[in-house]
Image (cartoon, rainbow over all chains, first blue to last red; front, side, top):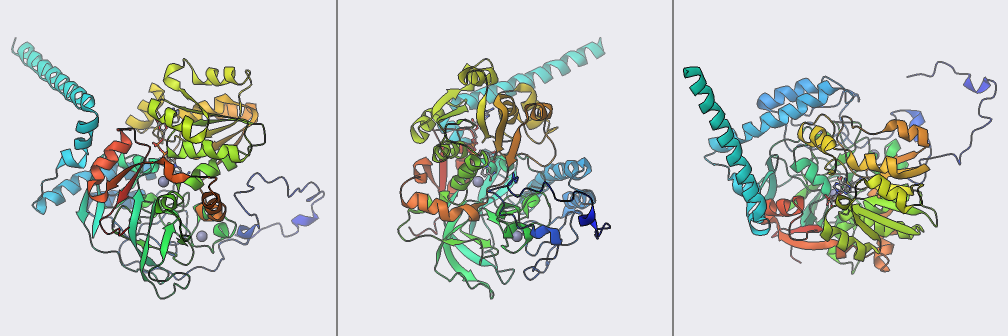
Amino acid sequence: MENINKDYMQIEGWGVDADPENDPTYPMKHRTNEEHKGYHWERSEQQPALVEILHSNERPNLSAVFGTSAPPKGLSGMIRRYAFRYSEGSFAHWIPLIMADRVNVIEGIIDDLKRGRFPNIWAEKGLKARWKYDKKKIFQNIGAGTLLISGVAGFLFWKINTIKA
Amino acid sequence: MRAMNYRGPQRVRIEDKPMPEILHPEDAIVRVTRSCICGSDLHLYNGNVPDTRVGMTFGHEFIGVVEEIGSEVHKLKVGDNVLVPFNIACGKCAFCKQGLYGNCHESNPEATAVGGIFGYSHTAGGYNGGQAEYVRVPYANFGPTVIPEGMDPDDAVLLTDVVPTGYQAAEMGGIQKGDTVVVFGAGPVGIMAARCAWLFGAARVIIIDHIEYRLEFAKNYAKCEAYNFKSMNDPVVFIKKETDWLGADVVIDAVGAEAEGSAMQSITGRKMLLQAGSATALHWAINSVKKGGIVSIVGVYGPTSNLVPIGNVVNKGLTIRANQASVKRLLPKLIEHVKNGTLKPKGLITHRIPLEAIADAYRIFSDKLDNCIKPVLIPSTAKY
Ligand SMILES: NC(=O)c1ccc[n+]([C@@H]2O[C@H](COP(=O)([O-])OP(=O)(O)OC[C@H]3O[C@@H](n4cnc5c(N)ncnc54)[C@H](O)[C@@H]3O)[C@@H](O)[C@H]2O)c1
Ligand SMILES: [Zn+2]
Ligand SMILES: [Zn+2]
């Protein structure tokens, strides 16, 4: 974008209080004001996009390199594509992404089953370690689970009985 | 190769995955000899970072041996022993050129608000990470640093994140001689921040957590005072009292989105995800720092927003400084501190766990079991 006011240095008082010491970014930033030149630096060669890469609409391009670990696919991929129509400042970007993450978990289980593999949730959750170091928590969780299930069952039982009556 | 595989919140496993390949002429492939689990991985593990896709490999703290290099890699050679900063940085963009290596603009297409990070969701670039036997390392001319002769690999692996992050937390505090510094969080990062606060001339360093064994550890390791917020009615009033009712000069948030201590923050931030994690520690930090004081944030939060008393920031005239640590900027100084014994990072390592037991390792670190401070994962390909 071009600076419309080309003569800004002629504005009365321009720069009279400029103080290079007043730089709260020191020492994190070795200020050279490089970025005043805009997006014009010498970029590394562009990594070819051999898989689908979604990019933030707050930039014009893909970064010169990027990861290719898990390209969008399936229903979660559709939701992610939708999310990327919105900027990083928008809940319409992040909430669908979280939803896509949850859908992706179910897709992951289906994928496992398709490959004839039943996910070992106990092992994946590292519950062996909890069993070894924190049995109390396991019993608490089982206790809470039992309480919840019996609560729900009790409620349904009561509901059915009252409906009958 | 064997690699960690994320399956969903609190579900991870080890699996055979294809070997990483050179995808760009400046890439290298590194055989991992040590990697760690970090507090930052817990945000992913808990499913709190948007765009964390099933099937990816986490891990941003690792060292290893260069196995293969791309055609444009001139600064590394096969066989080099390298430590790899957790940030992926090009070294050439306007931000890298000014030392903001945690904010590179050419390493993450998915978000502009964060640079590329190894194994840290697609919001941080979609890279597979180092909790694996092999890993692809982009910008190999710039990021990876040859481990100095004689340096203990356990020290080296902590130089990829924990040491620079703890150090930068203290540095951003702008600590002046005689200052009182409060650190929230006695995890590896908070403990290192407390240790480094002395290097800047603090006169008093106080660390706050609610896990007794960590407080005990911090007291010994960082030579600081340590207090349990569970035994306080109100941590803010406690700090005010401790500082002659004025507040601390500098307060560091080394907790981030997984903070405990406030039911309202935990429910809205961690359970319902209405906030980008729970901001309890940051809330306390803003309220317990002195007027005109400085709050330094290294605790990680998600990309949406958090409930913090911003009005108090204005009325108290606070300075807030925050960033992902700029590892590459700090390495020369920190390597010196480790070499001459000023800092002894490997003392933080309490657990050495085979990569094969990744799920248990996550559980131990996440639930703070078995007095764990920092776990290191050893892949079977590590030859030393
Ligand atoms: N900015 C960076 O570059 C960077 C780099 C690494 C880690 N981090 C972040 O730093 C934070 C700490 O990392 P870690 O590896 O030490 O994690 P950790 O989980 O081991 O430590 C966090 C500690 O905070 C404690 N805690 C929880 N609620 C608290 C509260 N309200 N007040 C005080 N303490 C509280 C926990 O008990 C725990 O001991 C994480 O958010 C991580 O993502 C940031
Ligand atoms: Zn880390
Ligand atoms: Zn850069």
